[in-house]
Length: 360
Image 1: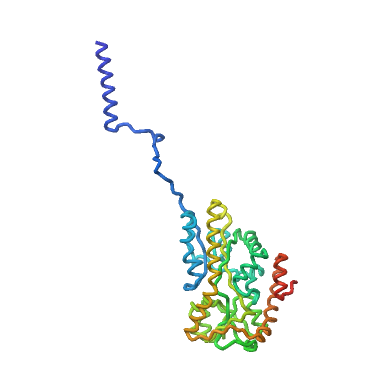
Image 2: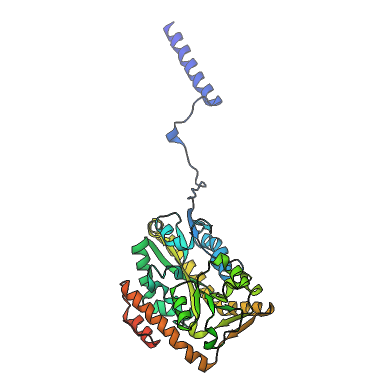
């Protein structure tokens, strides 16, 4: 009887186990979950907010801004996502905002910071460089580019990577300015100290007008002319309110903007991602600089189609008369850089001397 009872119990237990396996009543422990070999884990891309200032229609806008997010996405295999922010940071706040990570990066406009550190406004000195390609070569070869990055790191915790440019700054006017004598008494809108000093040296009256008010100022005669970028002035429709554009080689002012990135954010990226980002930025910079001559010619032709007279001053006697004023501005700028404790490298010192400046 006991044996029959035991046998019945065993049969019932086995039956229960079989039924459980058939109807899925048992569940594997969480630790027993199996991951198949086809499953992959995709890391979330790192977001990099980039502040910038630009004018739609320029080559700088198309290559340095519009095309940038897609190119960085492809260069990093989707590991970095750029978010363009043109409206949350004022132009003169770009370095501060990058340093405290209101944004992770910015294309900061160097000429906006000459009052903070005169030396970084080297391109603001009239006639310092002949063109953008020369600027890039000289600043790299003399160590200035490295000094600039060291300065932004120490002052703003922001690493400077590569330069970009809008077209050089030229003179818009309601009458022809093809002689040094034409500047006497002329009311010229200027954007920084160096431009103001140049106009004073030429006998003109430097005047400050906000960019947003400049079109109206030219239209109503508040100013007789303005110094600003060739491309930005065209795409801001200045051809509607001026008759002349003049490009004086001795007064040529370049307009670099540098890509800076918050150092803490930069160091948080893997080494290969940093390399990919920098290489792509360098490629974009190289393309943009090499295309500036064609862009210059294109915008000049656009102005002429609108009936504006474009003069590229090449009279040797006029240029000889103009250079002393430009040199005077450069020497004053060098004094300010010295007062701000900037130390030029021997290579840059040689270049400045060769260009006719007197180092204090």
